[in-house]
Amino acid sequence: ASPSIGTHSGTFHCDEALACFMLKSLPEYKDATIVRSRDPKVLGQLPILVDVGGVYDPSKHRYDHHQRGFGEVFGHGFKTKLSSAGLVYKHFGKKVISAISGITDEKVIDTLFLKVYDGFIQEIDGIDNGVAVKDGEQAPNYRISTDLSSRVGYLNPGWNEEASDIEQRFHKAVAMTGKELTDRIMAYKNHWLPARDLVAKAIATRHGVHKSGSIVLFEKFCSWKSHLHEIEQESKFEVGRAPPSILYVLYPDSSGKWRIQCVPMREGSFESRLALPEPWRGVRGEELSKLTGIDGCVFTHAAGFIGGNNTQEGVLAMAISSLAYYASKSATGATDDEQPSSKKPKTSV
Image 1 (cartoon, helix red, strand yellow):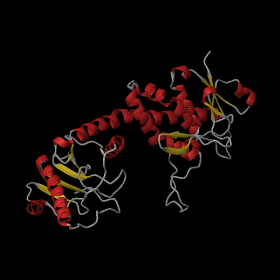
Image 2 (cartoon, rainbow, N blue to C red):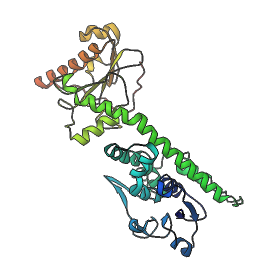
Image 3 (tube, rainbow, N blue to C red):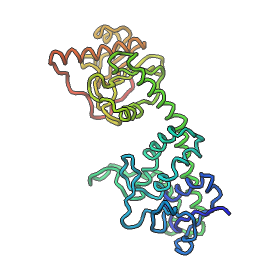
Image 4 (cartoon, rainbow, N blue to C red):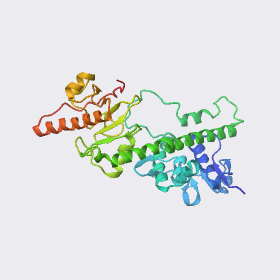
């Protein structure tokens, strides 16, 4: 007989709906029946419980988080208290990723295991446990009401609605959370992982671009920022405002021209490690070429975080010239202005 998965009856939430989907994505629970009850006698007979029962004991497949004293977190530097989704993911997540994506490489699965938690599961844990997105008591500027947890909540009957179809509504929630998890895992597999490979290779070969090791070159554009920062952390690279830190990234744009972009101090930061030289900022075209002595210059943004040239050789020359500019200032003891930051600058030119 197929095993049964137990969870609570009544109003349902995103965490147990997703927990049930994750379990049913595995071969051993594929044909499992979901039993929704609050009767201890019924629940006690079931081989696995999520979000009900008042016990967390993975050796007995009990995955509740409501009991007094519960404080389990995912680990790996994450500090958000787990919901039933996080608990199931913590113990079954690698198998779930493999079942959904078809990936068997353990190293790749380990990488996705952390990425899916950070980019998907943790939000559900935080919302279900009432963990604030940010510290402090300042009121938010707006309310988010279209997240997955909210949309699951909207599937429940309204206070003045008959609840005769609540079981069907719950299964709709299981399907909805499952589709979003599946879509996210497949996006990481098909788009995020290939970009990580490109970034890792470009970082590994950067000394062939320039002896400083501060310039990374991509033969084609990819989403690079989060990967670069993660690889730096994993490899314990020195991070600062001068070589040997990685300071500039070069890549072709959609028009076939080339860009030089400054690496942010950290992921999500608008502050450049080493902005392009102050005299270049806001200057365009031939005027910029004359100023820099580099042919084919297109622009330098007024904030100094990005620039353009017609050719790969041109943006490389801009990067090398920028390094030389700051090296000269350092040698003479002169100081440039502060690195631009504050509001996110527009990237259009």
